[in-house]
Length: 337
Image (cartoon, rainbow, N blue to C red; front, side, top):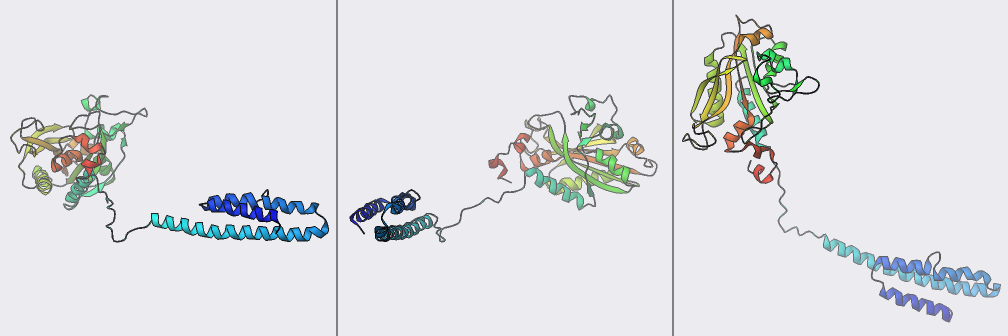
């Protein structure tokens, strides 16, 4: 190689010593061997030389190019290995260290209670049915003996849609839909979301309700009480309970069932409003007018119905004093279940 070629090689080697990464080497390669690189420009200049010099100078330039290329490839391998080792070390896993705990998650308390309530009634021979949340007024009110002037049908209590339909205020419409399709005897429960214009520490505009219906020959109030007592014992153990007379348009006679307040153990508190008791469900013997709406023989068949809010049961079961906690999505709260 000529002196100029030696100087160019030494220049390259000095710059290579300063390179500390594969990116820096790639920049150096482009500078010397790229399309507009210094060695490439030398090769382009061969055309201007006499024929007798072209072969000698060309060989010298190719020798220079080969040395630079070999030097870059060796350095590339060195830095590539170095960078790979650095990456592997940064990603190194100490298999002797304990693993990172991953929370498996759990079912929501409302889901847990809904499943448990369903299992209790399934064990008594009930079957589960379901229906639409957007409901016709007929199924939600009229077929259940709720007349047009009833307060429950007011705008301040029910969500009305522009279509003339409503968001169901109870799962009771499933009683009518099921009886329209099935002859007696039957034992059904329906569980799902219901909607009411109501919101405070014990009420939510959307909540979950479970409805039950039993129809057959000679079904009596004793059957109703026995079923409800069995449910309460399964759900709450030996906690004291009581029945109170009440009124529902779709049952006659009607009753509400209370259990002793779990927060004050019957002494009286703000949750039970000083009574020592908390209502858990409503029930009663099916009003004959409801049977007439589905063409059941009221002389031959009788039945009872009941309904309860799943959130209310969950609050009592887990000692929750504010229903809004169930919908805040607070992981600290939900982790307790």
